[in-house]
Image 1 (cartoon, rainbow, N blue to C red):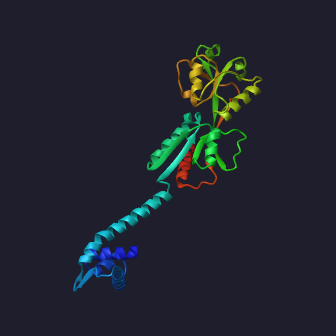
Image 2: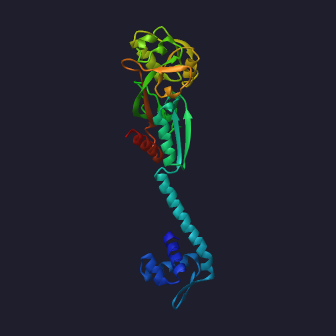
Image 3: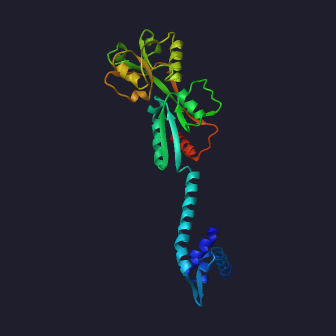
Length: 297
């Protein structure tokens, strides 16, 4: 039994006439009559009484009609579900991000745009440091992740879609002597200061970038206090436990005890990328990429 048999049957049942049903379906009457006879043979009983000016349902036909309609409706639902899945309108997106990346406006705007554009996709968010995110991507436990890649990041199974770099700023306790300066400051001004930094394992690429630029300025940062995570750095600077270097997006955390100053000359750079598994083919992931690309225009 084919779907076309059911469509033909429903048309004749609703029109009560083979000629009108044939016109509605866009086929000739003889082929329609033959298809109905084929259906009746498969069912094993007559579904219509042929009368001089049309066709009437038999008791079997009356029982068959609601089931035929339900089958056609289910087939349309199945087709619609397949189309939505192919377009990435349904499904699941497992998206990771680092603690510092979550403050970047591009990341939050991409998540918001994706949720608005594809509200029926189940969105699973996970925060951890970049290396752990890359490991999960390699195991296909995540579909994508916003990470802070190092300059030498090389993961053969991962594609990195570079996003705009982000400048970094000097974070100072509000009563620090340098905080009185209203202009940009040289990095070398921090040479004798105690730093508040997160452990290297929490933000490897940012940590290495800070150490690198301090080395270029002629000193190695003296870590006086480690912060348990990236967002805690600003709180500890505000508490007067040291100075730090933070991404410009984290500087949106406006605490009373901390001020931010730009660097004179070249500022340290925080890289940002959308990482995706090379082996993954997903319409849902394609839609996320579309969101990110639109935000970059």
